[in-house]
Image (cartoon, rainbow, N blue to C red; front, side):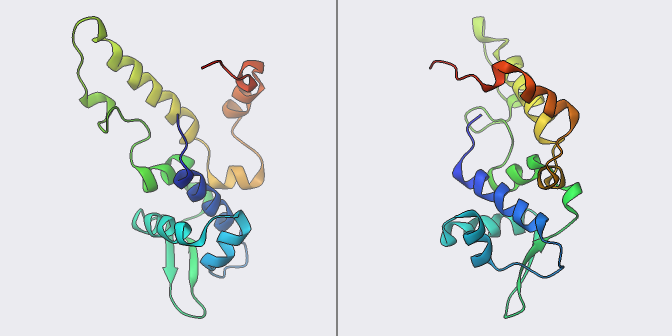
Length: 154
């Protein structure tokens, strides 16, 4: 899976918002500074997150951004979908919509299995999990596998 700068910035921004516990909206400038994200880029990401129903915003001196629902109810998958669409796609199509013929016929099943595995992690991990530093057990177990930390040759 290729994690774009847009996804990385969106997740980090959402984590910043999840960590705020004073009830006040956060300014885009403060979010950009906290995570070293270019301000202009962050504004576009925040617009995607707002359209995706994950953040609310208010203009003005008392304005800013805040989570649209509790951090424990927003998964990393929700954030990815809000800024980039489906978790797994093949040439811009959903895996269940592609068709192959001949020796490649079962390749569709591989793409669907990839999506299932992405969902198994990304839908289970919430913003609250990451902010607290306590990931779900199944995700923690995956990171304990020594092979998970090894680079594979290209």
